[in-house]
Length: 331
Image (cartoon, rainbow, N blue to C red; front, side, top):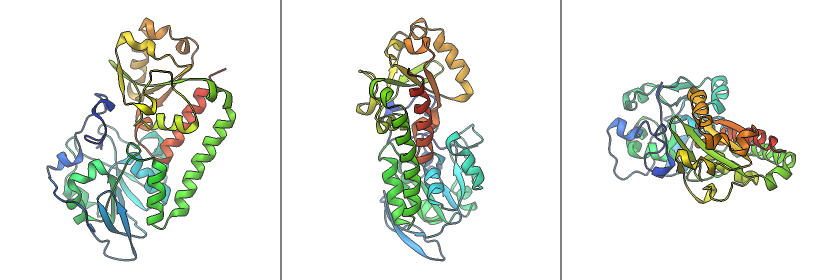
């Protein structure tokens, strides 16, 4: 399977771990430069169209696309599914065979196929062969090849939650595509669950501090403002311990000797399912980590790394579920 990865440019360098920076970007993979993006992009060729403003200009897009291609599954496919856009393919991470857990079931039910991309990215010929009638993707991947993609199909470059709250992106695109009701329904579902968790754990949310960190073999880092799980924590009304980045800072790598900084009342651990057992064993072999009050009390919750990083409404719902479990561990 092929993959589209974290932004090579829009995400601060210290916000990416070694394992997350696998592909430099779709633009490099295609070996194409770009000068002066903007304008209309492609035309669907048939049926009603709508003019949509996006990060690279204004584009005429089909009002009812049937074969939307999402350059990246995280966030972009979530938007397409929430708005009811007919979607055929979406990019996934290299070495994986399915979509992130937060959207895998929904994508399968909608008949969306993973877009296989070689290690250095897809060819334009491969994209064209899929005959999409709409292409949407994050700005950091679309911008370098915007002109070329626009010759294949109308193309929209959108911000991720790392540049703009996912609610704003979903609401704005829904309005411009004439799908405001769908956007409002998706956001309302998130807000309803958020508010229920607020009521259920009001005391814990008011008093407990949550340490959110990523853990991969040989590396640990406190999570910061660009991470969806951190954004969701703050939207819920939660707090991090003093000295943690929270919404005020970016990733902070920790040495083995600094694991005592994971001093929250409960820990949310960003891991990958494929190496979670190895990572947990490595952490628990560290006496500093093993002595942490939250670890000794079993107040640790894991979340899939992809879901906690970039996403939209469905990943945010998964983040809420994880935080619901985390606060439930606080007596």
